[in-house]
Length: 458
Figure 1: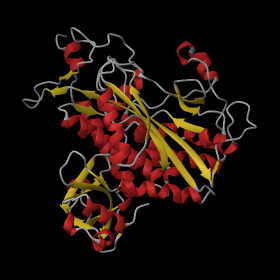
Figure 2 (figure 1 turned 180 degrees about the vertical axis):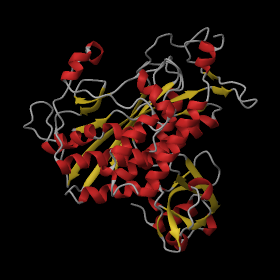
Figure 3 (figure 1 turned 45 degrees about the vertical axis):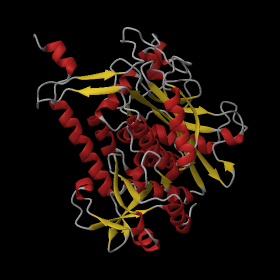
């Protein structure tokens, strides 16, 4: 935890001339406003910077202010004289948290957890993204037609691809051509922004996909870490004349970008998910109820963990099913970690990299805590291979399908959202639903490149 005095001293010693006040919209997009460093002092840390945010959050009827969070300060290494801080949004003059600020929702996670006797909620993320040489979108004239061109020197469509195989997971150098870039991103995250990267590797796609494992932190720090990784990866790529994307499925018929959310609950130093007496996975009854909550609300969670129309194309390419287990790679909930107390974690494997982590993390934890409150049965684990499973066996195991589109996810959340009460404000939830529904309608009105190719000559 940093003090305001420490941050102000850091500004002086690092010769920062500008302070970048960063904040996140409901859709997870990072926004910022820069102010002179000389205008930042004890009073502005306490009172914030009044800012017109109607273009980001829509009409609010209230004045808003950005209050910098001193724990998130860091010097921006690709700018000559800029320091960044992530900011909370407040209403003025009441100085109350703004209901549509998604970062406010993550603050309510530990409040609700402590009501259940849980001292800390720790989250991490295994996140994937692509780094391309360039992406060109055909948009010279309105309605001219849908198409885009991805350029990557690792692409197997090139005359001399660096690695001509379908699976690029963990490939070594020289085929892993972006190792230096990925290492630079990891080092910036750790040394400059103070968020640890436990490991990094080439992704499953041989066409420029990257994978990073973000260290576990408390809920808010974990969400800040993922937002920061996106910020660092995109800007590091930009400086090198490349482009990074966290889009769920940027290349047709290839591997998508997942964001597997690891979770554990603690009471003091004790891991509440661990019980050495459990023969299957050393899981406690608390962990079983938590998994039960995740599965009970699996369909409703999709709108937060698969928030874009592209998310459902990624899910079809790499499906997940609402079951849990240890070894089933298609299970929505997976149990991982060595068989010892401190390492037992539960992974929610139905999210992709386009998530707003403040909302997705909040919703996932809310579902798990709801399972604990209601003692929801998780059912039996499923470790069978889904690829070899027939429909009869799937019915026996009570495997329920996840929503196949944004509209189906909206319908699921509309009928199952009570578990979010006390976590997400009605104003934020309503705005989020409307935003996603609007995107779905817009997507449905547009012809795709596939449709042009398939139906043009009908």
